[in-house]
Length: 120
Image (cartoon, rainbow, N blue to C red; front, side):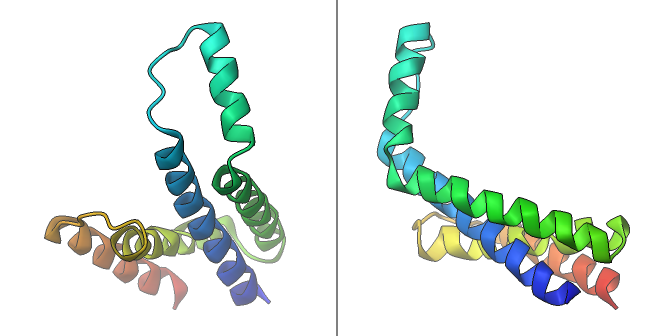
């Protein structure tokens, strides 16, 4: 059960973060912080399907994490959730077409090593 919750949480977190990045790229940079401009930006984002999908995915992740905490220790749940960083790096490279430096790949591999240490 706990590994199913981990998979759900990590998958939903990863999907949420990638959708959020895609949505904000489509929206563009927010540079005007006057109240009216912020309201218009929020209204545009509220209609952005990627941002909406991100919110749904992050809600799923949150509730999966809450359930995970009810069946395992915090010292397991938080470190193992770091697998989402690795998945996000892979999706950033291949879905969002970002340049990922060797240093970032090394960091992702270190995260994998840490998760393996925690999960055994």
